Image (tube, rainbow, N blue to C red; front, side, top):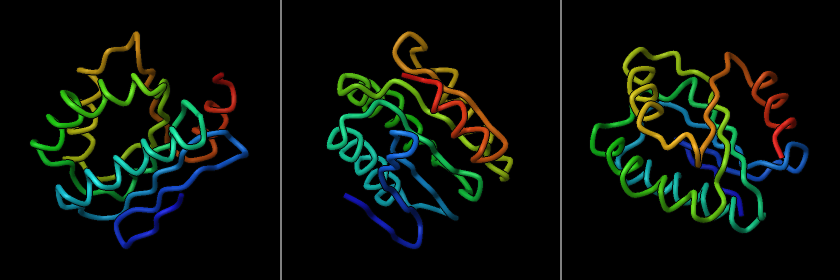
Amino acid sequence: MEANTEIYNIYFDKEINAVVMEWDGYATSKQFKQGTELMLNTLIKNNCTKVLADIKDMTIIAMEDQQWLNEEFLPRATTFGFKAIAIIKPDYYFNKVAVETISYKVDKEKLTINFFDNANEAREWLNKIE
């Protein structure tokens, strides 16, 4: 299961046993939710627990989508085994703030979040996670 749109590219990477999400530009609420749900479906299908989220070029996650992520998506995703995410830090200030806000609200007992400057660092960290 792989999806490549102008906004996101989501696929399973066997080398790191993780789902990779690459976001570019502005995603509408519908696109954000579709891409995020596809990430979860890919995670379940490949029986893995980790995600590499390259959101360096993503411009913003809307307030409503942040709320949906924290209140609906992440609690559901962790029940399906989602345990760790390596996030490549966004370049855009407002998305940095949005991602930090989301990460503060996450249940750290269920989901480990780590931030990186580049994909190589993120991949190294994910390789160390079971």
